[in-house]
Length: 338
Image (cartoon, rainbow, N blue to C red; front, side, top):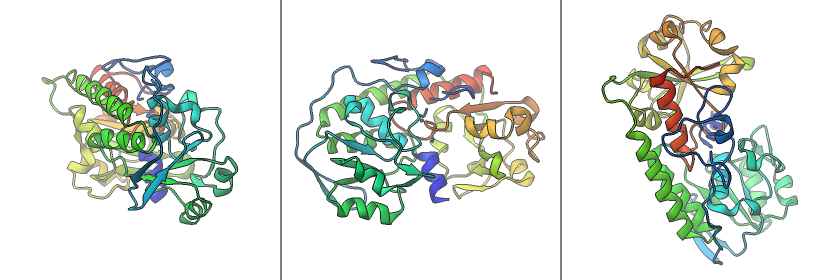
């Protein structure tokens, strides 16, 4: 479950669109999408860097989320070990300094970088072969032996506190920006991100009631079917979209629980939120409705499915406004899911 949480939050999972893709994971220089604009594939697959490339002022010493003090002297070669952290570095305007990526960094600008993870576990040898100046990691990044090996080689490793909700957008951006020696750019990106999220929240219909939405994690090839609870990471996003997290409201307190007919009946969702890859893995909406209990829910009867690209759904970073805009669009305007 540790790796599942890492994939979902890291950080999974990178703008929200219909199943073909939204990530967590558009912009521009490169293709900007404004707040409140439903995602398109092109917009979703790119990040929107700040207009001015910042110049790092180094060295800096910062406190890592694991309690260590980390001194960063150079940032010419950066290795972010999650899609969410990669997204922040690129959006700060320092993407050209990134020399590798985690498998969850799915946005277009990072696509050609070498992957230094194996089944979501970090390969210390692969990281060290790239001679990084700085490694950025999540608290769930592992295995611990690999991270210790990277530190033992003298590479600074900054661990960033996890993304659990909208309130974490600013702190995560500022933590990364501080370690990169560009705190002013971090403050600017935080303001932009929070303003855009606020603008999208203003578009949520206030006269339509609060739909109950269940977050389902699906991997049909492995027969993994889970329903999110209060600790899944989706509650904050759903509440911002004017919805109720049906799993949490039904009393599920853990991050994920096995999906059963009884759990679905208790949650009684009006809609379900899924990752696009997971939806494809079960055969689209038709396949989803064949999972026991789904077709009998209000969501199943109405075929009301909100699909989100894996690499961005729960990143809670610079593209969260577009994730939220797409959720709102699909939830209230009936955007299709494949």
